[in-house]
Image 1 (tube, rainbow, N blue to C red):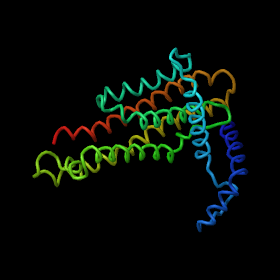
Image 2 (cartoon, one colour):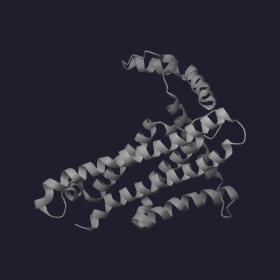
Image 3 (cartoon, rainbow, N blue to C red):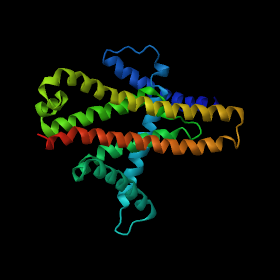
Image 4 (cartoon, rainbow, N blue to C red):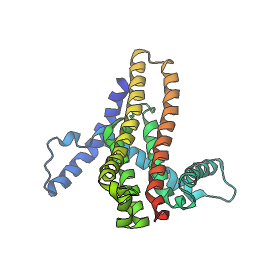
Length: 248
Protein backbone atom coordinates (compact mmCIF):
# COMPACT_ATOMS: atom_id res chain seq x y z
CA UNK A 1 0.00 0.00 0.00
CA UNK A 2 3.03 2.25 -0.26
CA UNK A 3 1.80 4.10 -3.35
CA UNK A 4 -1.49 4.94 -1.70
CA UNK A 5 0.38 6.34 1.29
CA UNK A 6 2.54 8.54 -0.98
CA UNK A 7 -0.56 9.97 -2.61
CA UNK A 8 -1.68 11.20 0.81
CA UNK A 9 1.37 13.47 1.08
CA UNK A 10 0.21 15.55 -1.88
CA UNK A 11 -3.31 15.66 -0.49
CA UNK A 12 -2.03 16.75 2.92
CA UNK A 13 0.11 19.47 1.32
CA UNK A 14 -2.86 20.70 -0.69
CA UNK A 15 -5.02 20.81 2.42
CA UNK A 16 -2.34 22.67 4.38
CA UNK A 17 -2.30 25.37 1.73
CA UNK A 18 -5.97 25.65 0.81
CA UNK A 19 -8.04 24.18 3.68
CA UNK A 20 -8.04 27.32 5.84
CA UNK A 21 -9.15 29.73 3.08
CA UNK A 22 -11.79 27.23 1.94
CA UNK A 23 -12.99 26.73 5.52
CA UNK A 24 -13.35 30.48 5.96
CA UNK A 25 -15.25 30.75 2.70
CA UNK A 26 -17.59 27.91 3.64
CA UNK A 27 -18.05 29.51 7.07
CA UNK A 28 -19.20 32.74 5.43
CA UNK A 29 -21.75 30.67 3.51
CA UNK A 30 -23.04 29.20 6.77
CA UNK A 31 -21.47 25.76 6.25
CA UNK A 32 -19.68 24.36 9.28
CA UNK A 33 -16.46 22.43 8.63
CA UNK A 34 -15.84 19.80 11.30
CA UNK A 35 -12.41 18.65 10.11
CA UNK A 36 -10.68 21.47 8.19
CA UNK A 37 -7.34 19.63 8.08
CA UNK A 38 -8.84 17.07 5.70
CA UNK A 39 -11.34 19.29 3.93
CA UNK A 40 -10.50 18.29 0.36
CA UNK A 41 -10.53 14.50 -0.29
CA UNK A 42 -7.79 12.76 -2.28
CA UNK A 43 -9.81 12.20 -5.46
CA UNK A 44 -10.71 15.89 -5.71
CA UNK A 45 -7.03 16.84 -5.46
CA UNK A 46 -6.16 14.32 -8.18
CA UNK A 47 -8.94 15.66 -10.42
CA UNK A 48 -7.61 19.18 -9.96
CA UNK A 49 -4.13 17.98 -10.93
CA UNK A 50 -5.51 16.40 -14.10
CA UNK A 51 -7.58 19.49 -14.96
CA UNK A 52 -4.63 21.83 -14.40
CA UNK A 53 -2.35 19.62 -16.51
CA UNK A 54 -4.80 19.45 -19.43
CA UNK A 55 -5.47 23.20 -19.37
CA UNK A 56 -1.77 24.08 -19.26
CA UNK A 57 -0.68 21.44 -21.77
CA UNK A 58 -3.27 22.18 -24.45
CA UNK A 59 -3.24 25.91 -23.72
CA UNK A 60 0.51 26.18 -24.23
CA UNK A 61 0.58 23.71 -27.14
CA UNK A 62 -2.12 25.57 -29.08
CA UNK A 63 -0.05 28.77 -29.06
CA UNK A 64 2.62 27.29 -31.31
CA UNK A 65 0.50 25.98 -34.18
CA UNK A 66 2.19 26.04 -37.60
CA UNK A 67 1.26 25.24 -41.19
CA UNK A 68 4.02 22.65 -41.16
CA UNK A 69 3.15 20.78 -37.96
CA UNK A 70 5.77 19.74 -35.45
CA UNK A 71 5.74 16.28 -33.86
CA UNK A 72 3.73 17.57 -30.91
CA UNK A 73 1.24 19.34 -33.15
CA UNK A 74 0.87 16.20 -35.26
CA UNK A 75 0.05 14.20 -32.13
CA UNK A 76 -2.49 16.79 -31.01
CA UNK A 77 -4.12 16.84 -34.44
CA UNK A 78 -4.27 13.04 -34.42
CA UNK A 79 -6.03 13.10 -31.04
CA UNK A 80 -8.61 15.63 -32.25
CA UNK A 81 -9.13 13.79 -35.54
CA UNK A 82 -9.74 10.56 -33.60
CA UNK A 83 -12.54 12.12 -31.60
CA UNK A 84 -13.86 13.89 -34.69
CA UNK A 85 -14.00 10.72 -36.80
CA UNK A 86 -15.66 8.81 -33.97
CA UNK A 87 -18.39 11.45 -33.75
CA UNK A 88 -18.88 11.51 -37.52
CA UNK A 89 -19.08 7.72 -37.72
CA UNK A 90 -21.58 7.58 -34.85
CA UNK A 91 -23.74 10.66 -35.42
CA UNK A 92 -22.87 12.00 -38.87
CA UNK A 93 -21.41 15.30 -40.00
CA UNK A 94 -23.54 17.14 -37.44
CA UNK A 95 -21.70 15.28 -34.73
CA UNK A 96 -18.69 17.58 -35.10
CA UNK A 97 -20.42 20.23 -32.99
CA UNK A 98 -20.25 17.90 -29.99
CA UNK A 99 -16.46 17.60 -30.27
CA UNK A 100 -15.58 19.99 -27.38
CA UNK A 101 -17.68 18.08 -24.88
CA UNK A 102 -16.76 14.57 -26.01
CA UNK A 103 -13.04 15.32 -26.37
CA UNK A 104 -12.91 17.01 -22.97
CA UNK A 105 -14.59 14.10 -21.21
CA UNK A 106 -12.47 11.56 -23.08
CA UNK A 107 -9.14 13.26 -22.36
CA UNK A 108 -10.09 13.87 -18.73
CA UNK A 109 -11.01 10.22 -18.15
CA UNK A 110 -7.92 8.94 -19.99
CA UNK A 111 -5.64 11.21 -17.96
CA UNK A 112 -7.35 10.19 -14.72
CA UNK A 113 -6.97 6.53 -15.63
CA UNK A 114 -3.24 6.92 -16.34
CA UNK A 115 -2.49 9.13 -13.34
CA UNK A 116 -2.30 6.16 -10.97
CA UNK A 117 0.74 4.88 -12.84
CA UNK A 118 2.73 7.93 -11.73
CA UNK A 119 4.55 7.24 -8.43
CA UNK A 120 3.00 9.16 -5.56
CA UNK A 121 -0.34 9.70 -7.30
CA UNK A 122 -3.61 7.80 -7.70
CA UNK A 123 -6.27 7.42 -10.35
CA UNK A 124 -9.30 9.54 -9.43
CA UNK A 125 -11.43 7.22 -11.56
CA UNK A 126 -10.73 4.48 -8.99
CA UNK A 127 -13.25 6.39 -6.84
CA UNK A 128 -16.95 5.92 -7.60
CA UNK A 129 -17.69 9.60 -6.90
CA UNK A 130 -15.58 10.66 -9.89
CA UNK A 131 -16.98 8.12 -12.34
CA UNK A 132 -20.54 8.93 -11.26
CA UNK A 133 -19.82 12.63 -11.82
CA UNK A 134 -18.53 11.94 -15.34
CA UNK A 135 -21.48 9.68 -16.14
CA UNK A 136 -24.03 12.22 -14.86
CA UNK A 137 -22.33 14.93 -16.92
CA UNK A 138 -22.81 12.85 -20.08
CA UNK A 139 -26.36 11.93 -19.01
CA UNK A 140 -27.34 15.58 -18.55
CA UNK A 141 -25.55 16.68 -21.73
CA UNK A 142 -27.17 14.24 -24.16
CA UNK A 143 -30.65 14.90 -22.77
CA UNK A 144 -30.04 18.64 -23.08
CA UNK A 145 -28.86 18.23 -26.68
CA UNK A 146 -31.92 16.11 -27.47
CA UNK A 147 -34.20 18.82 -26.08
CA UNK A 148 -32.31 21.53 -27.99
CA UNK A 149 -32.51 19.67 -31.29
CA UNK A 150 -36.18 18.69 -31.06
CA UNK A 151 -37.86 20.75 -28.39
CA UNK A 152 -39.12 19.52 -25.04
CA UNK A 153 -42.38 17.92 -26.17
CA UNK A 154 -41.01 16.18 -29.26
CA UNK A 155 -38.07 14.84 -27.29
CA UNK A 156 -40.26 13.51 -24.49
CA UNK A 157 -42.66 12.03 -27.04
CA UNK A 158 -40.20 9.34 -28.09
CA UNK A 159 -40.29 7.97 -24.52
CA UNK A 160 -43.89 6.94 -25.27
CA UNK A 161 -42.98 4.67 -28.18
CA UNK A 162 -44.43 4.60 -31.71
CA UNK A 163 -47.92 3.40 -30.66
CA UNK A 164 -49.99 5.45 -28.15
CA UNK A 165 -51.65 2.32 -26.77
CA UNK A 166 -48.39 0.96 -25.42
CA UNK A 167 -47.26 4.31 -23.97
CA UNK A 168 -48.06 3.29 -20.34
CA UNK A 169 -45.70 0.34 -20.81
CA UNK A 170 -42.99 2.15 -22.79
CA UNK A 171 -42.60 5.19 -20.54
CA UNK A 172 -41.36 3.32 -17.42
CA UNK A 173 -39.17 1.06 -19.60
CA UNK A 174 -37.55 4.07 -21.29
CA UNK A 175 -37.05 5.87 -17.98
CA UNK A 176 -35.39 2.83 -16.40
CA UNK A 177 -33.27 2.36 -19.53
CA UNK A 178 -32.00 5.95 -19.51
CA UNK A 179 -31.26 6.02 -15.78
CA UNK A 180 -29.39 2.72 -16.04
CA UNK A 181 -26.93 4.33 -18.47
CA UNK A 182 -25.05 6.51 -15.94
CA UNK A 183 -25.07 3.58 -13.52
CA UNK A 184 -23.45 1.24 -16.04
CA UNK A 185 -20.99 3.91 -17.26
CA UNK A 186 -19.82 4.80 -13.77
CA UNK A 187 -19.61 1.27 -12.33
CA UNK A 188 -17.82 -0.15 -15.39
CA UNK A 189 -15.14 2.54 -15.32
CA UNK A 190 -14.79 2.50 -11.54
CA UNK A 191 -14.56 -1.29 -11.31
CA UNK A 192 -11.87 -1.67 -13.95
CA UNK A 193 -9.63 1.16 -12.78
CA UNK A 194 -10.00 0.30 -9.09
CA UNK A 195 -9.17 -3.36 -9.74
CA UNK A 196 -6.07 -2.65 -11.83
CA UNK A 197 -4.76 -0.03 -9.40
CA UNK A 198 -5.29 -2.36 -6.44
CA UNK A 199 -3.53 -5.17 -8.28
CA UNK A 200 -0.50 -2.98 -9.03
CA UNK A 201 -0.32 -1.67 -5.46
CA UNK A 202 -0.47 -5.18 -3.98
CA UNK A 203 2.14 -6.45 -6.45
CA UNK A 204 4.48 -3.54 -5.71
CA UNK A 205 4.14 -4.12 -1.95
CA UNK A 206 5.14 -7.79 -2.36
CA UNK A 207 7.79 -7.57 -5.10
CA UNK A 208 8.66 -3.91 -5.65
CA UNK A 209 10.90 -4.18 -8.72
CA UNK A 210 10.35 -5.73 -12.15
CA UNK A 211 7.27 -7.90 -11.61
CA UNK A 212 4.77 -4.98 -11.57
CA UNK A 213 5.93 -3.78 -15.02
CA UNK A 214 3.74 -6.23 -17.03
CA UNK A 215 0.74 -5.26 -14.90
CA UNK A 216 1.48 -1.60 -15.54
CA UNK A 217 1.60 -2.26 -19.29
CA UNK A 218 -1.78 -3.97 -19.06
CA UNK A 219 -3.03 -1.04 -16.97
CA UNK A 220 -2.09 1.41 -19.74
CA UNK A 221 -4.00 -0.70 -22.27
CA UNK A 222 -7.01 -0.94 -19.93
CA UNK A 223 -6.93 2.81 -19.25
CA UNK A 224 -7.10 3.58 -22.97
CA UNK A 225 -9.81 0.99 -23.65
CA UNK A 226 -11.99 2.17 -20.76
CA UNK A 227 -11.71 5.80 -21.88
CA UNK A 228 -12.57 4.74 -25.44
CA UNK A 229 -15.61 2.73 -24.32
CA UNK A 230 -16.85 5.64 -22.21
CA UNK A 231 -16.48 8.05 -25.14
CA UNK A 232 -18.03 5.63 -27.63
CA UNK A 233 -21.10 5.06 -25.44
CA UNK A 234 -21.38 8.82 -24.90
CA UNK A 235 -21.42 9.32 -28.68
CA UNK A 236 -24.08 6.61 -29.06
CA UNK A 237 -26.25 8.23 -26.38
CA UNK A 238 -25.92 11.65 -28.03
CA UNK A 239 -26.75 10.11 -31.41
CA UNK A 240 -29.86 8.49 -29.96
CA UNK A 241 -30.97 11.74 -28.35
CA UNK A 242 -30.67 13.88 -31.50
CA UNK A 243 -31.55 11.28 -34.15
CA UNK A 244 -35.30 11.42 -33.40
CA UNK A 245 -35.39 14.83 -35.02
CA UNK A 246 -35.54 13.13 -38.43
CA UNK A 247 -38.35 10.78 -37.39
CA UNK A 248 -40.97 13.46 -36.67
